[in-house]
Image 1 (cartoon, one colour):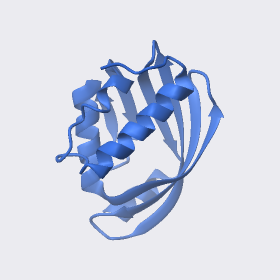
Image 2: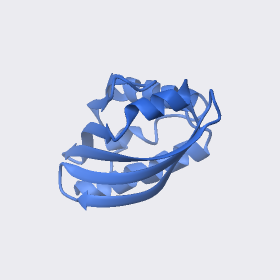
Image 3: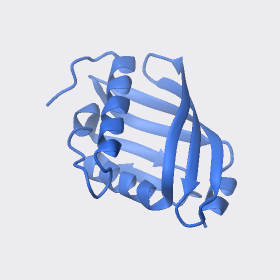
Image 4: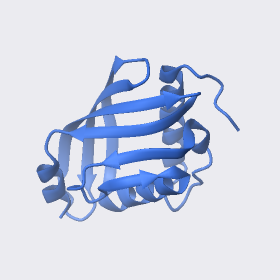
Length: 142
């Protein structure tokens, strides 16, 4: 299965739609990662801030599947409340306001994430999220 477009913004919107279906179907550990796979290059790299409970560099489809599992262990809820596309060609720049509830503490947070997302040949090859306050996020989850 491949994506139907190579336009970076369309690839990203398709991935967000597939991610929503994946989470609705049960998400990590319950639903298959396969509907998301066509949107990511086989050697995709996701860089997360080391200070986060799911920090580090995640590589390839297996790495992304493991990342989603780590996220689901960290957050009981993680909603993309608002998104603004600041650049719609690769690398895309997306500002997202997140509403989340930590699984370990039950604490609720709202925070922004700015992401750069590189799309090449119709697939996402690299994602770099930038958080305003990783210490507050890590504290809420501990």
